[in-house]
Image (cartoon, one colour):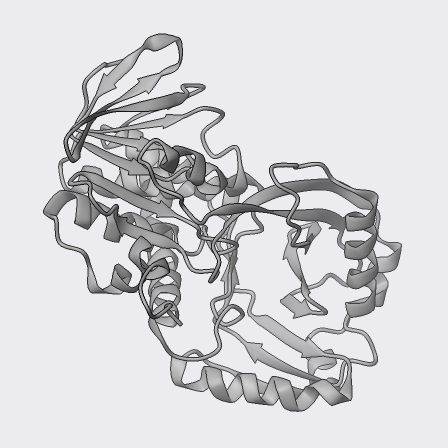
Length: 376
């Protein structure tokens, strides 16, 4: 392993690998350091939903970021598959957001009206129309919003593809290498300290450590507002006829994945505990059956949990670190890290390479948590 590099990226999830990929297009020498396996944390636990409407309440900076990320990653798929030699299982299944309680219909209608200015196609469906489109839906589904452009992708393959594409472009990626501290001279980071007292010198540092980013930020004297949020998921065997669309409802989702259906996800403040619990799986199983009763008979094929990096306003933290000349943050993506991977990689790489902060990410600086106004 080389002991001198231009840019060190701490964290080898999808965000770190995407930034490495885009930094190579700027000709920057880049090294990714990951204490576990590349893509082994939240990136590999994600469902890979490319469904930007759900987290949004209408236009604004976060909508701009999500829609740009959705468009960029979707358009990048052919190139990323060609460069990496991997199939990403991108599928524009469309998504249905539904309600079973008639008293919630007006709320769903209001959300649809708020989403209209965002520019994605949407169709209002009665319960009967929703069941014609997706026959597995429960008989008490009374309304739905259908978004045909929303899609999904294999999250594990996405991070592997970014990693492989970055390697082919000349980036160095190392797994099982733990960063334990930093070297600093005035307002610059000059290197990172590795376990067993090894060191790596660098000109620039990018922190992409996901749910662990707050720990890394302590080396910079920062109290970074990022904490882990556990999400439990399970995979069910597809019934016959199979589920065809992504389904959102009852605070959960169903995602068809070939012969499987991913059901997710819990949202639990349990620290860094990644255990799967009986309570979590029971809730997922029961919720899936309420949305699509045929799933009550489907066998569970797999259960797992991941840690989302959560911020107080559920928005990512992107851009420079106050009082440091050569440090950038890219963390706090919560449940949309896969969808925002390409746009984060592109914008953070531009910032590192040029010193210019792209307008798209300006509202997501760390300074918003100490400024009078919080990004909406």
